[in-house]
Image (cartoon, rainbow, N blue to C red):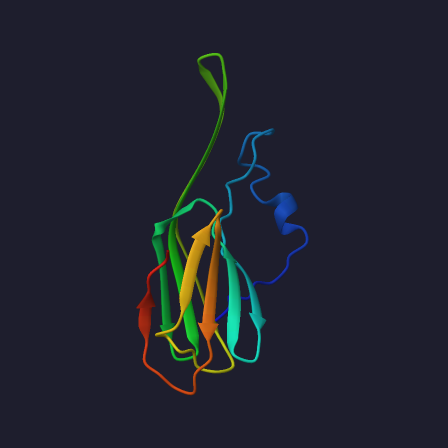
Length: 136
């Protein structure tokens, strides 16, 4: 299940225009971005989840539906002497679900998280039950 959003060309331009002080960036937007590739035997998924730790990533597979959830904590801070000049922090839970054309063999799924990218190998299967995957 993908989230569809309508593109509003002027929304970003006017978003918070009269609210936030000039010169400070808007709130950071954390999303899970996906690349899904298909071979004869499996689906290969690369999911960008910057700021997450592998212990805080949950992958659920139920038939042809894959759900990814993660707790994300991103911090950036610039200092000038001892006074903080700029600070931007983002915390929260992000999630993304999608449906594949065929069921996945949930017992053979492999998940690896490195450098902000979750790599999933989802072998194809004719039918099966759901299962939570351990991220290594």
